[in-house]
Amino acid sequence: MESFRLTKKEMQELSEKYPTPFVVISLAQVKKNYDFLKRNMPRVNVYYAMKANPAPRIVTALAERGASFDTASAGEIETLARMGLPGTRMIYANPVKTSQGLAASAQFGVRRFTFDDKSEIPKMAAAVPGAEVLVRVRVKNQRALVDLNAKFGAEPEAAVPLLLAAKEAGLHPVGVCFHVGSQSLSTEAYEDALALMRKIFDEALAAGLSLSLLDIGGGFPIPTADGTRPDVGALMRTIEQQLDRLFPQVEIWAEPGRYLCGTAVNLVTSIIGEKERGGQSWYILDEGLYGTFSGAIFDHWTFDFIAFKPGRRRKVTLVGPSCDSIDFVRRDILLPKLAVGDKLLVPDCGAYTTASATTFNGFALATEIYWEDEQTKRCASYKMVSA
Ligand SMILES: Cc1ncc(COP(=O)(O)O)c(C=O)c1O
Image (cartoon, rainbow, N blue to C red; front, top):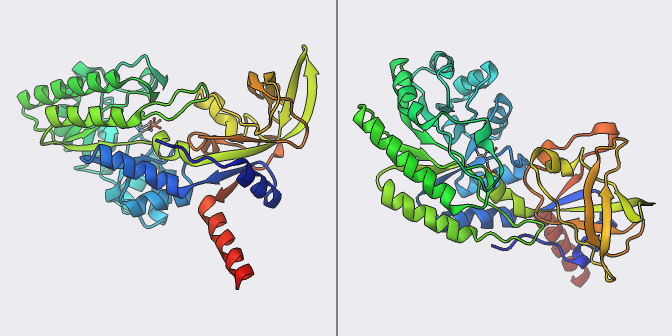
């Protein structure tokens, strides 16, 4: 699956119009990613994990395509409600819910929740009586960049007792969910998780609970700076085959975040300073760890940098503009000789980047530009010239 990638010329033209740092978002790529997923996993209902990138136009593009939404907080529920999305197109998928999140659920008609502990049951039952609940089960995966199972998921043997306790409290236990961890490079992790979920479905049936919903979470990977190009199509087709084999009659949901938006965004950043340290060139960028590159910390992500410049490549260090010494964006990356004013393109940076960026030290957030708007403007000016 191809990523959205600006050419050198496109990057230069945009840099003449907009001060860096800016991110360029391709809504066409977001839609392409969604369509690719639906083609390869036709049974899956998509609940976009908007935490990955809550840009309103990404959300709207996916909503228009038919997606629903995984929400984590009152803020996300309220944002979607303000955009006109009904609660029936949302799941509140944070296993631990705040009173504000539950109140927003009650207000906007969000009636589906995930949970992984008995302490959540009275909270959900009081706020939204009769809500449909899925128990989140802990699964194993050594090959995920972000191990969500370190913090979330009930032990598999606790799943059915939790669902029974939810029923006892007047909730509707409808299913099971899991998350193999974000940026998962393991197909086996999904296969193992699906086999485990089948076992839990069977145990539930034996205990008198007929479950109808399986949520397979997110985790679908995107290309990385080391050149890894995961075959996400093959991964999805394998999952779909397993779903047909193990869950032929069950409603299936997924909560992809990174996969839908990650490859749809490019950042353009400028070199604003240069120094020699320890025999190496350090380049100071106008974007750093407190901005779009926040994903280097929170998401464990390694960003790729394209210089569009010839010359022998040697190891350099890239740092951000803040006054904090944590602000090392990449050490020992191979790049040609650069100079103040040069631009660098950062591909595949749409997930867990702008979403967690701050204005620390007073540096503004990177401007968001939509590639489709640029195309429209280009067409309009072409028409004016040729008229
Ligand atoms: C509950 C839940 N669902 C979905 C996602 C999205 O995962 P990914 O971006 O790996 O697809 C996350 C990520 O943290 C999550 O916590």
